[in-house]
Image: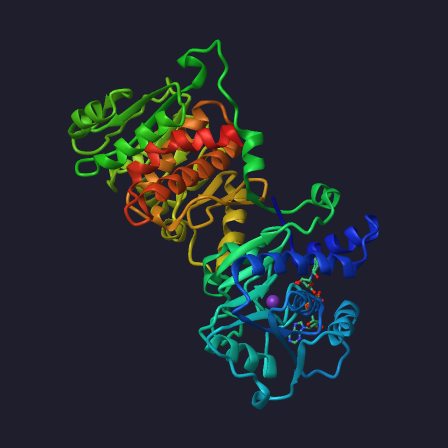
Length: 504
Ligand SMILES: NC(=O)C1=CN([C@@H]2O[C@H](COP(=O)(O)OP(=O)(O)OC[C@H]3O[C@@H](n4cnc5c(N)ncnc54)[C@H](O)[C@@H]3O)[C@@H](O)[C@H]2O)[C@@H](O)CC1
Ligand SMILES: [K+]
């Protein structure tokens, strides 16, 4: 699914109206009907709806929703902040229609006219949507403050008012004014602002409604950002052929583990095999040999070093090398990375301690093989490439860095970002907070290494890898709860995740 900028969203709206012969007021009605259907499913007639409407089309959506709720006898009142300017044409049209109903409409003149809010009230925020063009100040700020001060459920239409859709709203020195919604009912596609941690306090649960904007526009409009959904994954996943042997699915290797950290090695090796790699050699230290052979008998083992991997340099047999899970941070690992970068000219998967070693040896960055995949979490990313001023700055920095070094950066998080060497950013749609648990990252490294071995391209390996990893975590959490989920459960549910992809 493409993630569009505000300008593109506005053009999409206009394109649908012009090219598909739909009136803008009808598009607004579709949006309002979608919100209405969801509200009726979620709240019964015992609730009262207090709808705050700005004078743009977001407010117009609110007015149309008020009329629809009133038509089935839900209690609704509408509040419009005083403003001398006329509303947008569709706002005015809907206001005219609403005036013919029994809905009470108040103009808010000052804070004395704010309605009292009681226990059974649901607040609907239709003040500003994608048309927000400056920080919220003055009277609007007071209204947002008043709404946020109440603990009642708040439903934002399209966007929590005050939040920019495609850039950072949070500034360090300013007291921002944004609706803190419990639900955001948004139209058509995912929005960049809903994918970053800095906006979590505002969006609540985001629900998407398909209002049938033009498919042609979506298909033909390029955008740097996409949301990884099941249809994208369906296009990547390759079912296995019948006349095959293990050689067809690649020879992976993982340099992993050290004394006291063999769990990471075991998890990444199991995940690599479970993702479908034909065969795997785990390169481990002597102290980890017995553990690995016992815990992962399906993997072959090579030994290098005593308590941590030594100067291993025998890479030529492997189709893919993954390095990092549990290797620890040792001086000799600088040489190990140098050996690897010098002698292995195919993409590598780099994670965990291998990234920390890299971050202390910046001179190695330029020798990372082209199309290599690195999988940092935000702290590792910061160590590698420096601090960011906002989550949006981090996104830009990841993309610029991926372009500069011609690598793929898998920046792990709630919506993991894949930044690509050609300047694109893909956000994952699967996964849950239960996966913030030790070893989950080692599992991801194993999966991506295993997919690369099977000749998925580096981009496909990243996309399918993060999606499968999150999906396996979601399936595991469903059975176990997010709290009880551990990394092993992600590995154990990889099979169920594959099955779900095969079935969609
Ligand atoms: N694009 C689409 O696909 C559709 C959009 N619709 C709705 O239309 C909305 C966008 O409508 P508009 O473009 O009219 O914009 P908005 O309704 O978001 O707001 C624009 C109005 O608010 C003013 N404004 C912006 N920032 C302000 C600030 N900080 N303080 C005070 N005033 C401010 C603007 O000058 C303008 O009058 C969407 O969010 C959605 O709710 C739907 O009706 C149907 C389909
Ligand atoms: K809104």
